[in-house]
Length: 374
Image (cartoon, rainbow, N blue to C red; front, side, top):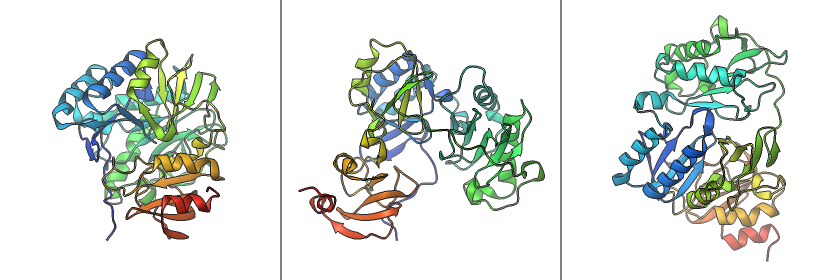
């Protein structure tokens, strides 16, 4: 039996998830963008109804941590008033969409995302972790991001509809992209895909209208800290923001902020001077993933983020420190992975969390000694 429990759903505002530090309430900003007023309201809500910590997720969402049973309903009402949550729980549940964060008003990504938002009522009921990826810029920016039904560019420059897990996609006419996504979602359900829970695991042959094999264009370079055509990109260590610090920084700022799936903020037409944010594209913390760890997560048996801060400068390549074998912070393999097990640490290379260890049962000091620390 595994030492952790894998949930088949993702939390949202109407369906929070219990954690060691209270409930997690997920917020899904439309097109992953928050205005200045929404940011102020979000920070105030996190401080009033949570423990003041806000997580960035790999789906371009936010999570307010430490919410109590008593404060949850009032928090949701506040978020509805900020237009960050839908008053209809079913519509909120369906709104699982990741949009390339470099969209501009009126471009293809913006247009398709708005069309899909308008078509939410037409979607079938899908497993909770499933989502849509709108990546219609000149080259795919979200190739490694989680999603099941995608619109992106092919090598020829045309927009294609691609089912996750398939190497190629099919041409889709301008203006029909959202309808094609809805149609593919219905096909998934009608062909028994719900049992597999993800498009990448559903092996049924695609319908003829979605079975072309146009190869996606080469991925664009991921956004990194520094100047960006839309403003300034800032890294968020381990994807966690302190609401009080962010609130203070926002007092003198007027820019909107976009949430990326890489634990990065994109500040439109300006910068954000909140403490702890990463401005250096060579900062070793940009190459480190670490879950919240113990005691905030009941499934974790070790502290994670202080350890990751100490290890990151010593590691060549990607580092993943996971409080348990579930590996929430990173789904893919890392060059160095440290997994908590029974209060000790397992070390593996080129592996995912929980993989067979090269060395197991290590203390923190013993682990650090392997990387050259005294």
